[in-house]
Length: 391
Image (cartoon, rainbow, N blue to C red; front, side):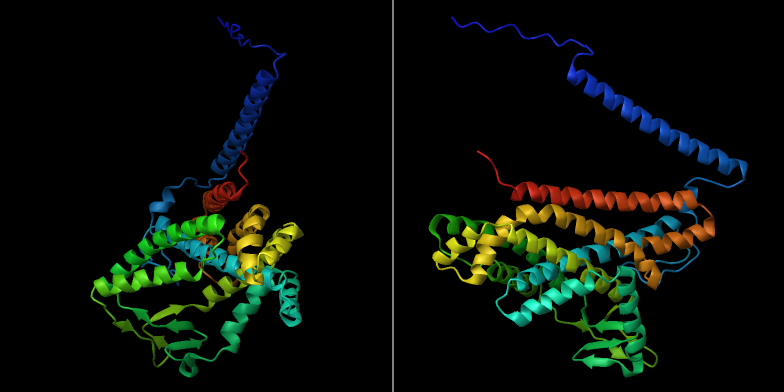
């Protein structure tokens, strides 16, 4: 009859490496907490001695200023916390769209650097070398001056079909929200799920049979077809709010302000130059034999890039690409230089009116910390999915 050795008793001893590690961590956390407490206590004491008011009670007071651009209505009589919320949504709007466009443009530029066409390859290299070596602030100012000085006034706006481009920004038609649009959005959300399942099925089929199916156009068609079906099921509403020339500005329709377009273009073009280098280095890290094997199987250059090189390069691309996404989000704070009402701009106004410098700055720091940690968490999750799983 097999016998098991008695379990070892865990003893608290200085000779135990595990015990010393736990003790050092406790001491480090305690020291950091004491430093933070000392700094906070010293700051509050000095502010009280000098008669400076402190606290976050000002967030419920009336802001007393308007914000020129907002995704939802904002009035000067509303509280400061709602003004901060407007600034946060403006920052997130730029950051999310910027990350999406940076990923697409950076990937296209990186793939273009492997093109057999010398002209395409040269243009991609020039793009990277020019935009990544010009400071981001200068690029933001360049785009802002282009939109506010070079473009014509509203009464002479450039027109391309239903679109108007002028110093006032880009005006475009928007649908009048009805049941048709609501059902279309719901159907497109369901279509995204169906497209995801299709991609997984197509990849499995490719691994098992070698039969190649579209991993881009077919999912796009599924999403668009779902939207059309939802729109038809909701009544096929086709009423549009069209922009038109007014006496002093372009009226009605939707609009993108010059400040927003300058920030979005500046951040996207600047960051995509770095992202292109990240993707290029990831593709080059894949062994040359993988490309030769794909050619031997009869795959075209595009299929080799899509099905063989990029999936393997993801394991190298994702970690440094996360840094570029974080840089884009944090660089959006430079939007204050061209008057875009992001979180930093709203905070500066609130700080000047209330004098609560420590509180306002702490809010900005907390917001950027949370957005950066959330971005890192999502990219870490995706990195784990793309990593090679050992058996």
